[in-house]
Length: 336
Image 1 (cartoon, helix red, strand yellow):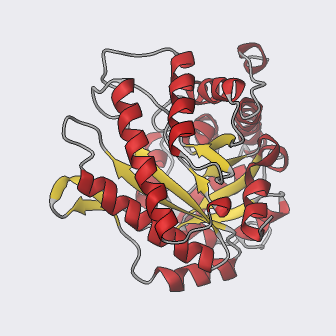
Image 2: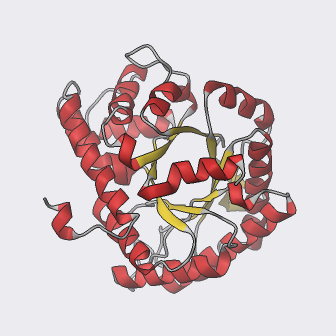
């Protein structure tokens, strides 16, 4: 196995998943404002360090995606954040795109930027202790979208990014997120997601990316959040598996789902059903942000000094998702 493949297995093996803690300062400020906590660098670090030093990190979290601010911060124990994460048996990762901007030629769609100067930034992050990276392409669904232009340009950017990351001996997370915003059916989500993922892998292969050293971070197949045609959790699992089996090359070792607007419980339940039905060789795990942090954030906001209580809430959510990543979760275990 290659060194990059070993990193993927370390991150996603044995039911472990990824904690997505790469919210930009603006996004994190909205989340903290929402629970009435001032968004200072100290408070942002305090909440994240509380999660990163939780006991279930060792058993459940194989990787943590950081934001530029966090990877350069020092913990209360005076070690840097990647060292803290590695000390918990996990790998530090870093979000490297600079955000989605209006796509020239189709201004109602987005193109993710950040390729300029990326090679030098990657070298810096590698020296800081990063083992993997993340880049998110974003696609909205409507009668006309995503357009061929959006599908092509975002796939090309994801492939260019991935090639540069592997050149720097890190694992790229490839995240083509087809958004759940809208009135579309699950069938429409299936069709568009399949088209997006297939094009991504065509570009990755063209750019000579080693697929055995890549993690795919896709959306599940869901009806739009305003759709009148909701489907059952079982149908979500079946459609998601069918879509990925037909669009992801077999060399890819691991798939880590994004939660994408699902509640904590929905994200866990759907992941569990996917793994119960999974007959492929793909590891199917999680890379959750809100669906891992939301309960802990609400608890923490009531008393930001209650580290133990906050960690207890986070530990439970991490445990539930790691059981789900092995198809072993149940509603009974959830409520114990």
